[in-house]
Image (cartoon, rainbow, N blue to C red; front, side, top):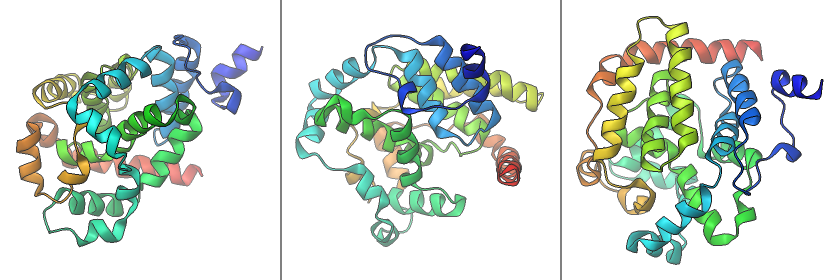
Length: 264
């Protein structure tokens, strides 16, 4: 009876937060996926799913970042990317066409914020339990999510989110994110028959493999530079297939958000 409720109500409490013991929790992943399918705007469920599938992912990721010269420098300087991304006056003051200004304009146009994204992640899993350095690395990976949307050209529509999950999954070696992207393809086919979701995700895979490793990018330095220059520096190739369907999926995203809002 208790298990049945857990699989259907989609509710999570503090006791449900994934611990850092390296265990894989398929039941938690299943209920997170089902909750996400009911509300595709619920970012907490993405974190629940990823952490339930990834198991012992946090420590190897931290060690890899720390072992690189760029990552060690980021950890030593301890610059808070989240605070920078929340400084809207600063981002708005950046040159026209710069990464930071375009990022800020996109978030304002879509009514989303880094605060909302971070809050959803903290409610799902509190990385501060890992200690200051490890928390710094993992929150930085989380906070760059919408920056990656801007840099790669993937919108915040359904197909764009599927592709950015694959991009991040490949870049950060996250089985959880990649599994979620493939499961989401099935949902995309169900809702929108004929959508080239599989080809788009393969395209995202190639874009991720050809780009530099995003985990140790000095985003604070990149924010002030023209977006085109940033893409060249980071080896980002724009996803032509996805962009050919961009307008169609933006409209679908508007419809979905309106439905979620109406459901209240």
